[in-house]
Image (cartoon, rainbow, N blue to C red; front, side, top):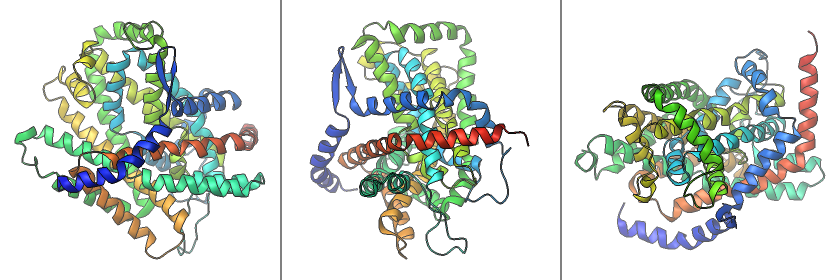
Length: 484
């Protein structure tokens, strides 16, 4: 894209992006560290639902595995996709480049102790996911069996409007639902589109020779290829997305976990010291701004930005699951933060800590994906190749799922119009190409801020509907305990 156009776009949008970002990411000083209030809001939600729902994140883990394996599934259950496919679609939206680059930033700035707090936040986020995805199915809009009109859909915009109407707060529900949908439509273009496209393009060019790559200066070709690949899947709707992610997510997860596990195994002698450093650093860090509080904030921030618990986005995918029991889908959803944060983010952290971690790296400006790549390269010179492949697959799968999130929110706003479905998908694909060719600036900053803006109405609605969630949970658990 012409740099003058790029600059003009930035100048127009920058004031709005700065204003929204300042509001959403406003931070207050806490014992020498800066605590973003949005992080506190999301972590508080995880703490509340963990206690209020009787530690469902721990006691419900085994049942979640049983549900995903199809033990309770019936052929005549309503919905669009299997519960396993709904899980993989939602996981593909959360497992992205943040699991590779974001973890490295957290460790380089906050030290190994940030890993401990990432795990804690991931465990708490399991309870939030349970709550929002239970509501996603409970208040979803059923589709038309004849295939005409709007398809089945759900998510925060639906449970905010319908759920709060049940509480005799219809006007509040409509306002919060529309606010959520509008923010999601714009927000999906950044974190779930342009950022992924941009970083995937940069990784591919770096892996094929950097400045000497045949793709250098031709980023639009990479963006166009990504757009075509994404378009081939999303044109078919949620069933096509679920079929693709159902195959892609296990492959990319296994590829990354095996690669990371190999590096960790090679450096097995360093693992005990790494675990000790994680524990010590969580409570008695050296030279970290804000001390233990600063490390805790860094770990929590990385986790909530990665697994998206509290944003409600995953409930959009889970609302399409085939089930008659909304609570069963809540159990399925609690596996997401475990996979995303407790497993994948932790393995990234161990790869870095057992190989190249040095407190001086942050001061030298070495962090993000280059730090992770350097850690993988210590095992084999070619190790960054599977890392690059996994990263591109992460970015691709994230774009696929976030296109569905944005489309669902858009259809909620405009209704069943002939042009709406295809029009939004073409609009989304255009931004895939744009993201690959521009410097990430004000537009991405604005969309990222709007993605986290949705946590405000979403969690407010979850708190108000918490008694309904607990009643549904207790009723479901009583039924599955009965002898058949």
